[in-house]
Image (tube, rainbow, N blue to C red; front, side, top):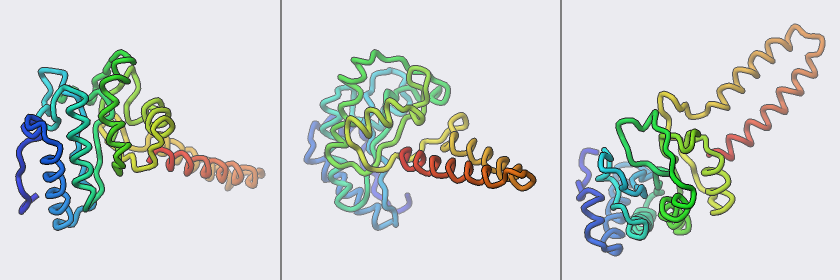
Length: 219
């Protein structure tokens, strides 16, 4: 943003191995976010740099889970003295140019042992938001992935913060909500000319209740 400080790239800050310094960077970033009218810093990248062609490799701290976790937590704590912080991209993001169509396959034990711990540490440190990755993981979009966003993030880690959307041309933000909204509209139109209008309206009411609960769970 115009008027903001240009700090060294994250990969360069990772080479310092200095969480205290990273917390100071986060504090400065948080101050500048507030000064510029922002209330969310979406620049905490906890991806592991495991692919030599990673187009955004400079945004993370390196390939070691412990290093990434230590510095990501420091950045979270620094920025959240002033604004909310968002850690991303859950999980397994590495390749950039094919991110919208990529289907990532990683051994589940490897995901648990290496890819998830930096995110878990940020959640334990009180990060306000967690953003899902663009790609598919074992065939399912990370942004729609119940295992990641519900079983792991909300149930296992007890995360009760924000899960902001990461929309793509192939991954609209609320696919299920949009489809149900269309169905409800058609159902309402049918109810106008139906003798069972009361039953239709009851169904619509029940569906809206379920939709609201699902949207609340998603975000």
